[in-house]
Image (cartoon, rainbow, N blue to C red):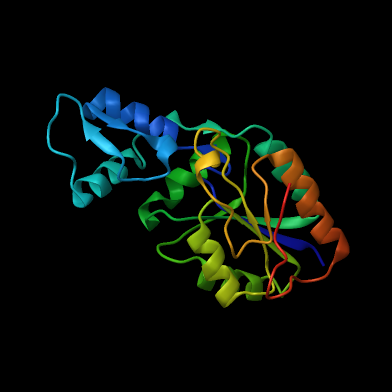
Length: 214
């Protein structure tokens, strides 16, 4: 049986926060300290009032899908997924509204990544569990940049291997390894090898990981 690779997109396959920050500066005269790891690290140029939480979410929705073309490919991501797709089904599980599913599919196709895309809001544990069941309970690897999603998957699909990846080099040093991930790897060449080894071994994950880094 083929394995199953369930992979996030933003800050895993495509750089997002750096381009979001440029767009905020150019279009809204807002500085965004993306390297802080804090989405609320926005300040108006000229000393205006700090954007409210509601305004921040409106700005994020303004970036998707109109400005998705600004996003750039994470080094080695395309090649790693292409190689892994020979031994595993690949599903991109992205936390965007459902109206952004087709734009995300088109965006990834533009980077030669023709994989199934599922949109989601909230924790990713339930959709990961559903995908695992749909594909017949294969050895599964989940890749995401947010610790909250690794905790969700650990709760709802504990037999899934969980790889924590933060591919933005300005942001990665500020983000601690996710406690519920099995491994933290921020480079796709190293991640490809680790994932391939899980599929080769053919053994599901344990519920409580012995976390390592690479």
